[in-house]
Image (cartoon, rainbow, N blue to C red; front, top):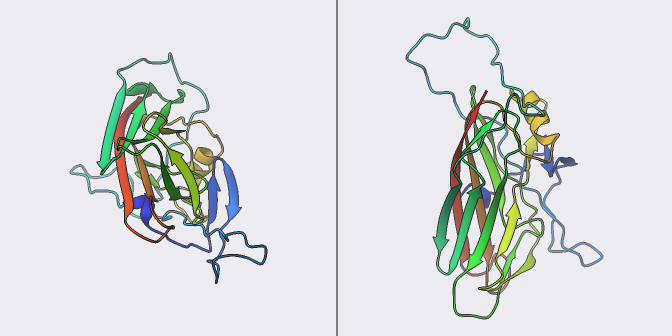
Length: 236
């Protein structure tokens, strides 16, 4: 699961919810002098996926730089409607559902997505132990040339209460890493500049991942791992 990997990139900036935070090195102990847990950041890989070769020769000369799309700040035409999208993943008594209000959007149109972690067991309440920022991270992949932005988490251990009647719902949020050396740095900067999700034309996959413990402490016992994805069609 992409959200479970811890990758430390000291040359990158961690971006959460539109804000840039310098990446920090792992702590040498479980707490600082005040007794508070020291957070370790896990930014996503900076390199986009390798572009698949095309059967049609590219009109660009060899060695020319890739030109990445920009993200419109408002719809480029009349807003579209579409069918709702939903995907689920299950691990034991836990379910992760990822939902979009619709399956197609105009470029620059506001995209509404949320993820929900539900408990279907018999206990009156369970406590999920994981990142204090969120139990769910969101990744974005798509475009031409392809872009891949994976989520980042703090490594602290915080409790999140879940009951069968009260699942935890998280609206789409942005996190990840960015470096001036990224070939798609202009796209990343425009992506993180806006807390809302808007995209340029293309086919885009949104993934949600959740990993947490339900017994003992973080790092002890079996981890619950969940991942779901949906694909959106964004038209010019």
